[in-house]
Length: 369
Picture 1 (spheres, rainbow, N blue to C red):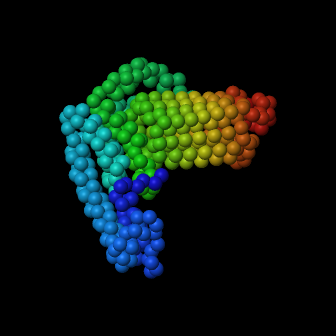
Picture 2: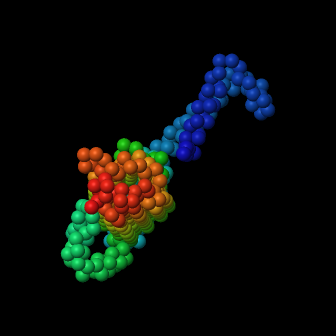
Picture 3: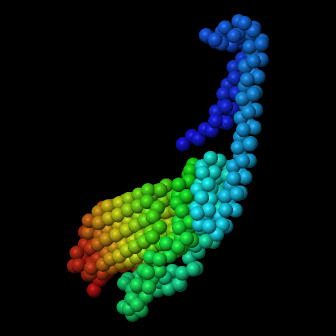
């Protein structure tokens, strides 16, 4: 998208005036231009055009410098207001920072990094019990029975904590800051710099339909979060907690979910092309009607995965766990993707449903007993 301010337009028009006035031959023209040229002469006409061009360029440069200085001062004030004890002042400051970042490409990176730093310091994941953030689990297969019973008494306590914390003032402005980051002008972003929202506690946050882009949620707590129909291309969720999170119809091309904890994650209709779920725990995940071509599920726990009619052409299932997975209607899935030589194939059992396999065939191949 091309973003032209009034200053840039004036500068371009000024250059056109100068170019027209410096033409080696007699500049033509019609109407009022021809009348003015006849009245003052060709040489004076050239001087007039060049002078107007220089005036426009000079005004453009001055205006641009003045505008940048004013916005820089406004940004400094807004950043100071983020430390206010009044939640309404902080919310207004967040809106101001977003507005400034949308007006100035030069101030955009600083504004976005400031908002990200504010969220990390205001709402760090360390505030919550380690039992929530680092849930005990097995890498492959269903969690052990004793582990599940051990966690059961805390289930309602955790749910109550998640229910209450988003109502706190800290949660309100932290989530507003995240939404402001999601609303930024992405074409102002530096493609070499990611916005860092790692190790943040943002359960139940709703970012539906946003163009989020290159943001790192590494190690963040995002259980029950909603990213439906969002543009998350190249986003990073490495090591994040995404239990019961929803990414319905989201664009997750080239996104990374390395080692994330994502029980019951909902990826129905998502674009997962070239996404990486290396070592991720996708216990009871739902990936129906999605496009997972060339996605990597290497060493991932896909126990009881519901694959629906997802296209898995070229996807990597080496060393993954597909026990109880339902891939009966999956598209593009080849035997070579599941059954590898030298023990590097996927782990299946009698409850695994594949497009071509029967229990008899699986037993004959020695994959189940």
